[in-house]
Image (cartoon, rainbow, N blue to C red; front, side, top):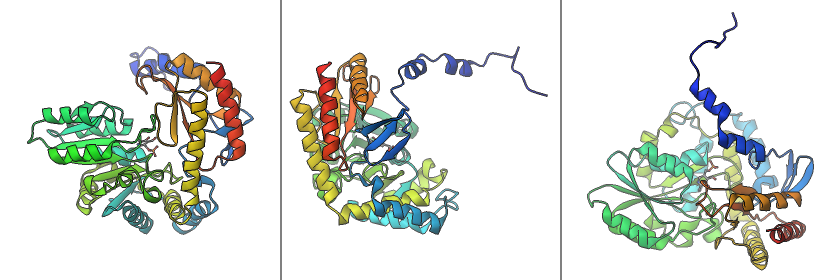
Length: 398
Ligand SMILES: Cc1ncc(COP(=O)(O)O)c(C=O)c1O
């Protein structure tokens, strides 16, 4: 018998999927989920056309580094394709521990735990530690994974104005002294490119007894001594409890990490549902991240080139009088102010062979609709010529 739903009760959720206006909008204008047909470094092919990638998080440009590629291949030969289980059961392997030790040492933390996605790691850095009755205090612009972590924790939440120690002070004063508090912010804000005001934040956190969690997905490999991240940039490692982040940006892989004291990492392993019930990081991405971390330390040229390219790129955008939201890092938004302007600017760049990502409200604050761009150590002089031509073309048509 072939089952039919005809004449049965209407399936409301399936109906919602078919009629959703946001999905229709997305499919009509197709700015997201663009499929890239081929890639070699910063050069990609989309719809049969050669383009320059200008929105990748591969800040150090290590995703095509021969040593990093070779490490991924070797891991498959040695460990097979998958750990086929969670760390808590059958999925723990020596390669996890090797990567965790290297990351902990690099970050100046006692211990580290890696997982299969940055999203999961960052989420669990909040969800496993805060609980019902606690209060999480968050910068209002933090990443979606941290909001999900807050929601899952069942703690109450207070927001403070983006990157504002003054507002954080006011918010902290309103939270009862005896309440357990967790402060969470990003080291580098992925959309805005802003660097968190870490010294002021950790000072206020220490006064109020906050457990401090910094999501440094975009600061790792970019800021600090040799790319040790935003907390190191401010020489403030002693002032934070956890640094959480991603392996999918400067480390050219996929996966995530939580680094902290040995006690906090063991606590995470006991209490984090994302850790206990999700399959462990696979061999190839772990080996890739470890080799990229070694390359970062042994070949400072990538870090140097990233910053030289960042200066060159932001100078170009300034000369065209584009609004970069005062970005201080290689993640550089071009704020256009409305979704229509953002869409037009994004289309003009695409026309000229430069691939970027459009981000509109509610993903960004109202009036901050933007095109997100990111420069990489891999961009060459030739790439810059094409980027400059495309930016000039798009800026003139604003
Ligand atoms: C600030 C921040 N945290 C966490 C993540 C999640 O990392 P991943 O994409 O590696 O899962 C991202 C991803 O863009 C991010 O920007």
